[in-house]
Length: 257
Ligand code: ADP
Image (cartoon, rainbow, N blue to C red; front, top):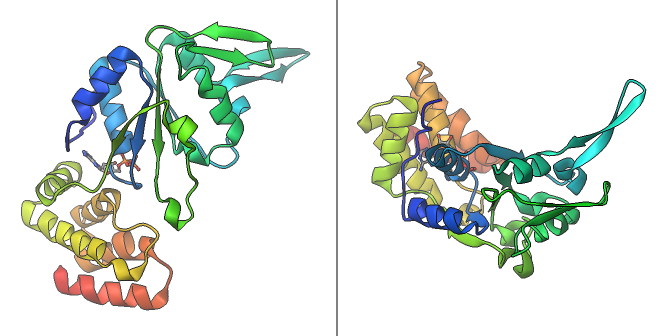
């Protein structure tokens, strides 16, 4: 597989390499669509390590991660979950949006995130030592003022943490040209639209325009969808359902592209 495209935005590569060497758990903080998942795909590839990703949601439990008994024919057999596999094989596990998961997930990873580096499998009554290459990475969206879940200090302080944010204009333009194959001028226009909307804090949007939305708009335009329509459906509509805000943003973006 070819290396995933990732444009470095700060010191994240070197910081991750050192955290990896020291086997310190790593926390990627930042709003959705800012390249956290792409970064970890890129780093796993660079380090030549297998990556196991779990998209956490409110139903994600420790059983989903550690494993369960399943019935196969007349037998009941144990199936390792993705975390147990990663612990045994020395893979990188990426718990995307960890704060969304049930509290027992946080409890389950505690002994893996300190000097013990072991996983307790309660259903088997077994404790397993992590492979020396095992590394735990999690992401977290610190939008707590707006109703997102928080991560307790006692959990956060088990990680080295790096903040991800929307990249500066030049970098974001490059990401769009690389990801969607559009030209520089068009990429600049899309980034300008994003900057404008990101600065409209008075709109009170839960989340503003992410690089992901820009990439989507750029791809639609690249395959021939009219520009304004692409911006409406890929950038404006996903942001809000408030009709007045949608109308105002469509007017604004039509003038910019
Ligand atoms: P997150 O995990 O933060 O929600 P992703 O990693 O899925 O975000 O990024 C969303 C999309 O944005 C990616 O698929 C990629 O197209 C683009 N992207 C964002 N930041 C970068 C970057 N620094 N380098 C390359 N692509 C990026």
